[in-house]
Image 1 (cartoon, helix red, strand yellow):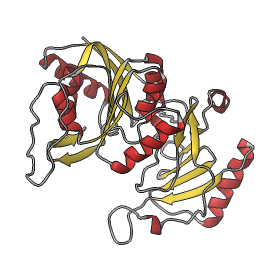
Image 2 (cartoon, helix red, strand yellow):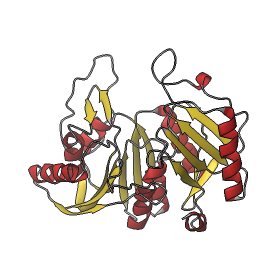
Image 3 (cartoon, helix red, strand yellow):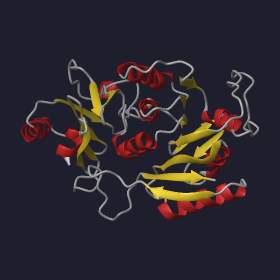
Image 4 (cartoon, one colour):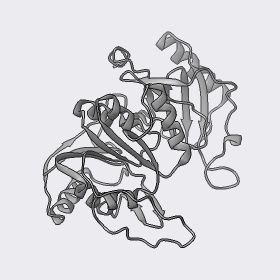
Length: 322
C-alpha cells in the first residue's frame, strides 16, 4: 500500500487504526514530515511515544517529527485545549502531499481536528477522476475537495463554510497549488443552508435573528457536482444539521441544485447509521422533489482505513441525479 501511495505522490496516510487493530481510542497518521499520534481515552506514557516514533521511523526509513494530541475532555470540561496537550516544540515545514496536491497539514491550529481528513481521500480521488466543470463544495472546511476539483479542470468552484479559520487554511491550500482565489475559485464564509437553499430556489427557512447579518444572496443555479460532507450535528439560525435523523433537510436542496445527469458526493460519518438505510433515504428524498437517482456508487475506504466487518464508520456515496 505505501509503495502505491508514494508512487502517487502521497505522504499523508494512516499508519495505525486503533479502532480495528486492538487499541481503541488511538490513531497514528503521517502528514508529510509530521507523525501525528492522537488519543481519545487514556494518555500515553513518554516512553511509549518514543518507542512509536522510533519504530515508525525505522519502518519508513525517514525521521518524522512526532506530535501527540491527547483529545480527551479537558479537566475543566469541554473539548481539550492546546495547553493540555504535549508541547512538540517548533515545527518543520508542515506541508503534505496527496495525489500530487499540496496541503497545509499543521498539527496544531485553532481547532481540534486535523486539517486534512485522510478517510476522505477516496472521495477526493473520485472528484479528480470526474473532472466536473462546476462544483459546489458544502461544509468545505479547508477546501480539500474544492482544490481537487480545481486541479481536475473545474471552471467554477464554490467552497462554503462558516469558519473563517478553516477558509484561511483553504486560501493557503489554494496558494500552495497555484490556484487563484476569486470568481472561479470562491471561498464563501456563510451558513450552508441559505446558500444551498437559494441555489435550489427554496425559501431560506429557519428563524433569522435580528442581530445577525443578512445572509449572502446567491442566484438560483445548477452545479455539475455538489460535495455534501456535513458534520454529525450543528445548529444555526437557518436550520439544524442532523445527519442521523434528518439528512433530507440537506439532501433535498442539494438534489434541486444539481444539474440533470450531475452528481452528488454525499457522506455520513455516524457509525450507527446503516449504509443501506441512508442510501434509501436519499433515493426517497430525491423522488419527492420530482427528480430521481439514476445510480449509486459506494466509495469504499482505502486500505489504510480497514473495516473488518465491511461496515466503515464513514460512508461515502457518489450519486447521479436525473
